[in-house]
Image: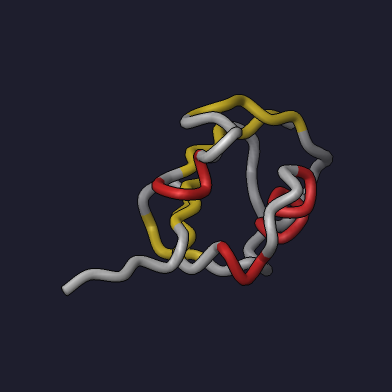
Length: 74
């Protein structure tokens, strides 16, 4: 199945902003993090189709997943 992955802030370094990824049916968010060779601790916020999600959530065909690193400010 195909999903769209969007990376934000420092997760884009030496990667992409937005990409289509092919993965197996019933893939979890965690499996996409592995495919992208990201460290789970570097992914603090996850959205699937604009709604907050977790690493164990299962993806569906044509979902859009957005990954954000921990965000500091002040």
